[in-house]
Picture (cartoon, rainbow, N blue to C red):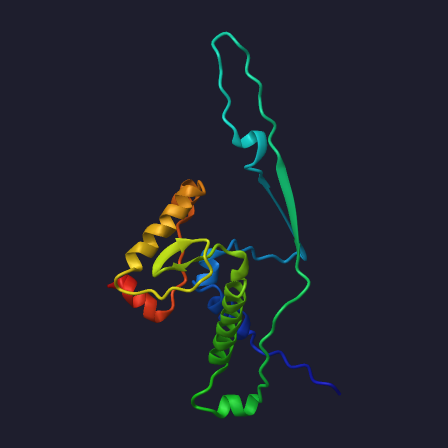
Length: 189
């Protein structure tokens, strides 16, 4: 005779609760949760005739500009897991380790992995670095943040956004910086 055991599915709600907590990568990325393998999205191109503003002379007709929509697909073909061997007797007899704690930590580890993965993609981002001790745009040379130059860095970030016509998007979505703890101290000061 085979027994069928049904365990409480506490891990689902606890894991989802932990994954739903705010993290840096969710704030700076366009995050889509899906139960479908292929995610389709589209956006209106900002190049070509759509980006131009035409002139009009009184009495002349207007020529409308076509909108170019770009379609993209993302196929989810890999995943990540955090597995833990659970001896139910040990787990329930332990006064310290409870199932909810293990599943919370699993969610935390998945969030940490994703954030590291997102930040490792920095090669496709724009570099603000240093040249001659001053912050410069599009320079990969590292310049240490200090109390005397942190304000220059913030001004340069805003200048680059304006120069690239990103002020409307920045006003709508905000601006993000990823700081190490020592540099963040200068920003707070």
